[in-house]
Amino acid sequence: MLIMLSSLSLTGCWDREYLKDLHLAYGVGFDIANDGKIQETVELIIPPEIEQKSTTSEIHTSYGHNLRSASNQLRNRVRGNIRFLKNGFQLLGKSVAEQGLYSNLDVNFRDPSNPTSNVRVIIAEGKASDMLEQKTVGELKVGEFITQKIESLEEMSVFPKETLDTVFRFLKDPGQDFALPYIAVEGDEIITRGLALFSDQYYSGMLNPDQSILLVLLMGQQGKNARFTKKIDLGYPDNIQEYITINVGLKKTKRKFKVSVSADGSVEVHLNLKLQAIVEEFPGDRSLKEKDLQKVNQALSEILTKEAESVVEEVQKANCDIFGVGRKLIAYHHNVWKDKNWSKDYRKVQFHPKVEVKIIDTGIIE
Image 1: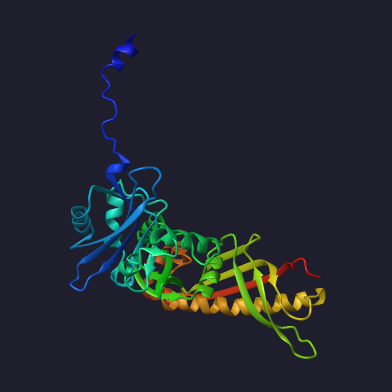
Image 2: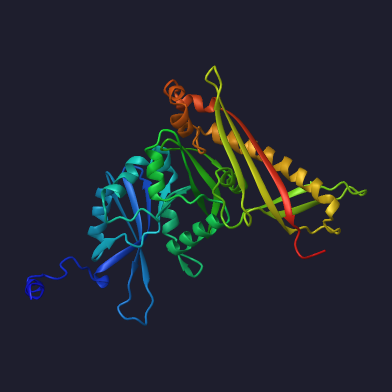
């Protein structure tokens, strides 16, 4: 009886919002305008008035001295309130990345209504607004296309899976940096440039797509697939050279990462990667025979080891501690870390990458 009487005093829902009264932001882009203001571009998805119709999209742009003021200006331009519940990504123009990410992402963590856990952060080679203003790519809305593209390339090990949450943790961590997807507009297409490397919060360099796959593997973050096409010499009498395509993402990768400090304080990193490969294409006029496997394994190991050395060189040149060497020093060699000026000393770290490839399946063709 007491429960029944007390239920009479309940007020019910008081904070509900009707979908028909909202504009859902599926993608947001930020640029630095010519006058130094923040330019915010949003793709809004408008729900249909009746179920039989499909959703429509609108692209809106606003300017402000910071993200909050730009968002307020944007809300003044559209009908109804804007909610970011379905926001799949934040697209940052290269100018924003060069000036630093922290101040431009800070508002995301101050506003609890903004999702962060599954929102990808992407770098655009030019202006983010140019990409979003395409409105559609083929039959897909531009935001839908970019979201699917990023997710697909994460599965192909081209991009690591980074979100607003992980980026924010890296921005607060002095011992580790990060890399983000780097895309561009080419004609009517949105293409992949590779990975944008960051030193602290600033864009500092890039890797091409092939280098990106190897970096993701070296980081221990492989997707469901990771393909390489390499040219090898099997030493046949006619000296035929063949291209071979392998997939190393279908099997588990073994990775060893060890940071050691010598008596004089110098830092060395041993990074070993053992890959189990499946041959997906070998279009030569001879089949890949058992006696050739060892030679192919050795050739692929040497090629990928040399490329891993090149990737590490590019990462150090960009002063991007993508592997978290500083994090290891903070945890296990704290006295050494305190004596380091990591923004300068990271480039002095001696890396020793090694990649071993073992083909375990040559396919169904004998």
